[in-house]
Every structure is written in structure tokens, then in C-alpha cells.
Amino acid sequence: MNSPPFAIASPTPFRLDLTVWALRRREHNEIDRWDGQAYCRTLPIDEGAATVSVEEVRGRSPEASQLHVAIVEGAAGSNAEGQARIALTKLLGLDVDLSGFAAMAASDPALGELAERFRGVRPPRFPTVFEGLVNGIACQQLSLDVGIHLLNRLALACGRSAGDASEGPRAFPRPAELASLDPTRLTSLGFSRAKAEAIVGAARMIVDGALDLEALATLEDGAALESLTSLRGIGRWTAEYVMLRGLGRLHIFPGDDVGARNKLKRFLGLEEELTYEKVQIQTSSWWPYAGVVYFHLLLDSLGQSARSCSRSRGSQ
Image (cartoon, rainbow, N blue to C red; front, side, top):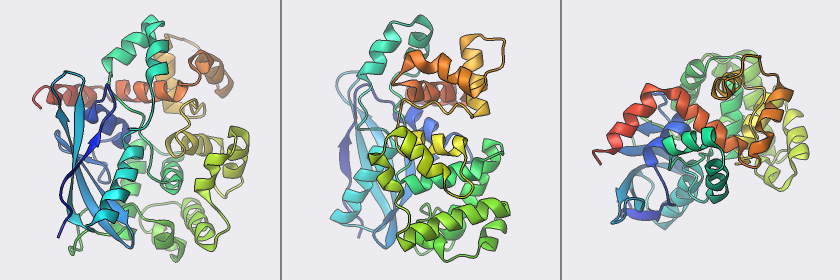
């Protein structure tokens, strides 16, 4: 028997639709699913999994809302609810105070217009640093479209199901579910040999107790960057991606991200190409919210998808 639905308070302002789009990035993302009304994800719960459905319900005032969460399949009980709350708080950026960003944007006409256009988006974060690391590895030197196809296949092949069906949505694999694999299992899904070995190697180190990715939260940026880049297959781009989307360090704008560089160049109206160093200079005035701008520029680049979800909100 599934747990009864429960509510999670949302910050003000908040837009579930925009936040989910910043999280899922592409329409074919089968891990983070959006049907125009509800966000669904299958989460690992204890030794099983549960699929949650999240809807935003507006309150009496225009800005007030609440999230209604239902566990629609799989693990039930207080453990499931508690773990789902923790995961959703990270995934949807519910505990992030953006008042400082709002004040900063208000003093910058260009940034203010961007912030107003996507008012209510929260900075999403993967529920575990390991998931952030695997996402980063999967998308190295590939288009985001291809990277998300790889992640979909990985979840379907190796993640836990919330129900009895052999097909259907799966939770993102935990380290223990990947550590025992031969890397050829991942190459059969389309990963390069180097990426497969990096993912399986990191999973084995975690299971063996030689690596604690969650403990990176206690380190300064330089130490966290050094620790991440010491891992097989992890360079500066992947490390900074993990620090932003896995550790929630919102002052980081990944300067090696070519797509993000191009978005920044267009936003600033620059003609010159941006190097890593120039990105750091251009974003320094946005400290400590350069990563928040990164998510706004991501939404801006989604174009029609972002406009479509904005229209769908009007019918809620």
C-alpha cells in the first residue's frame, strides 16, 4: 500500500515548470519526467525504489504555492516519505535562498530582465554527488542530446524499478548497482571504454570506502576541485559541473562548458570568443550567484520548450 499524499512548502517565488526544465534539460530525459502538469521521478528508497509525482498548487496570493507529492508506485511508509522529501528538496532547489540574487538582478537592467522572465526558477541539484559525477562523465565531449540518451539507457539497464514491470521508469543507479559490473556492460549501452571505466571505477571506490563524494561538501573549492580531478576521467569541466549541479555551489559558472560560454557570449553581446579565464572575469560581478545565472541562461537557450511550459502554467 502506498503512502498517503503529502505536501512540501515551496519558496516564494517558485515555478515548478521552469525548475523542472532547468533540471531535465531535454524533452527525451526519461529520468526526470514532465507532462506539463506533474513532475515524476523514480527514487531509490532503502533497498527498493518509489515513483513520486509532484504538482504545484497555487495558494490565495499569486506568489504562494505548495507542492503536493504522491508516491504512485513502489516503496511506502514514513521512510519513503522522508527520503522523498530530502531528494525533492535538492532536485527542486527548495532550500536555496535567492533573495541576494534578486537584489543583485534588480540593480542590473540586462540581468534583471532575464531574472524577471524566469522568475520562480530554482537552481536544481542532483540528489547525490555520484549522480552528478556520472552525468558529467556521460556528457563529456558529446552533445547534451546524446549524453541524456546514454543516461536514460544506464538507468533503464541498471537502476531499480518501483514496480514489478521489467520495462518502465527506473531510479538512477546507486554505486552498489554499478560497482559489480564489468565496464563492457556500459560500453554495450553506448558509453566509450574510458567513460565506462571511469564510472565503474568511481562506483567501486565508493563501495570499498575509498571515496566519499558527499564529504566534498566540507571542502573549500580548491580542495574539492583537486579531489575530483584526481579521479580517473575527471577534468576541470566535469569537476566544476559536479560542484555546481552535485554540490550546489551556486557561485560556480563552469568556464570550460562550451555551450554555456556561447550562451554567455550572446547574453553579453560580445564578439570575441570566451576563454575559461575570460568567463571568470565576465561572471565575477555576479558572485556568489554566477551559477544561478548559468541556469537562467540554460532556460533562455531552451527557447520554445521554455515558452511552452510558461504557457502551460497559465492553465494550472
